[in-house]
Length: 71
Image (tube, rainbow, N blue to C red; front, top):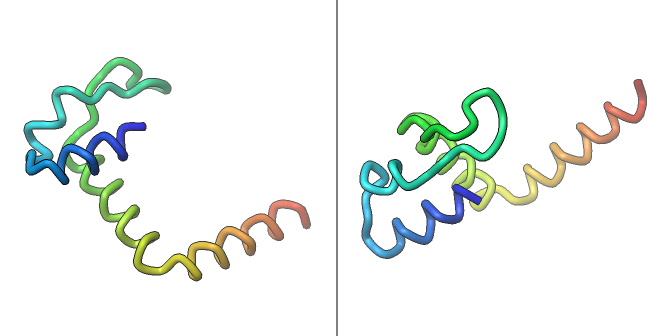
């Protein structure tokens, strides 16, 4: 997974800019291309938010599942 590659390499002191060329999008419309820096930073921000507020993420996931099954 690209996110864990970025997290691991950032932990080793590399910058996101130097990691980006090594990342390749595996599926979708942009398959085979490198993600934008903005996409990488968004993914990192979302990851940090999930780590900081795990209960809120769990609750939102449960609420979303309830909404999907009720329609």
